Amino acid sequence: MSRRSQAFDIAVAAFVGVLGQLEAWAGVGATHQQGPVWAQSLLYAVAAALLLWRRRHPLAVLGVMTTVYLVEFAVFGSPEGNGVAFAPVIATYSVGRYAAPRRSWLALP
Image 1 (cartoon, rainbow, N blue to C red):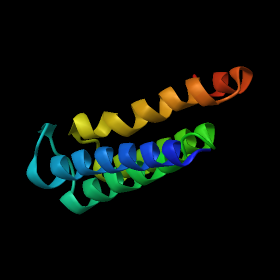
Image 2: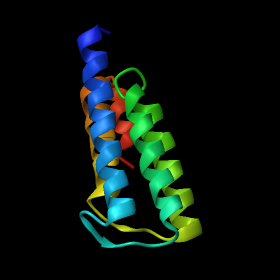
Image 3: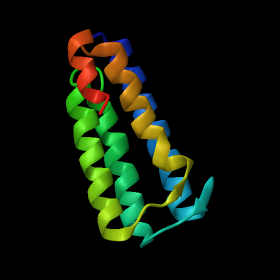
């Protein structure tokens, strides 16, 4: 992977992370916050960090991200807002774009 691609991935992860933190701490784009702010903030930070590996391991990133989201939602409930959707949408796109066509079908369920 080129340095340019790595820099772009870092920029995407940072952008998603900043938007998530703004939603968690300042309510920017949030429609309903559920659970403690630190838990929501941690969820967005972990999801943004996972995006750093989205090109090399797209299915693994989506799987781990789904697991992290499910655990946080089961413990604290699901917040509503843009931050919840940013990282999973990018990870799902990455599976369609970078995973082998036959393996990408595993992300469908």
